[in-house]
Image 1 (tube, rainbow, N blue to C red):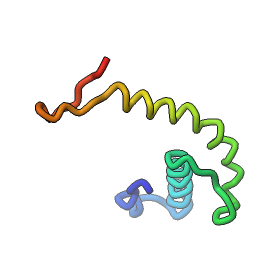
Image 2: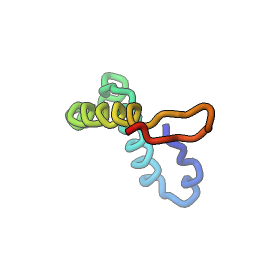
Image 3: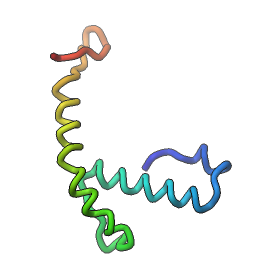
Length: 80
């Protein structure tokens, strides 16, 4: 989950909860998972997760193909 602990002192309880729910959604999207019985109240977001999964996978694929680590130079270079 995203590290939000530095914000906890300045956010209201409702804002903290909203931020936690958004981070859960982003985590599920990154893991390619849908919400299920464990967090049934969030299953309403499953259509969004399904709709966004393919474009996110394409983005990750482009990232992997476009950028390679050059060990001898220890820096990132564009592979295009």
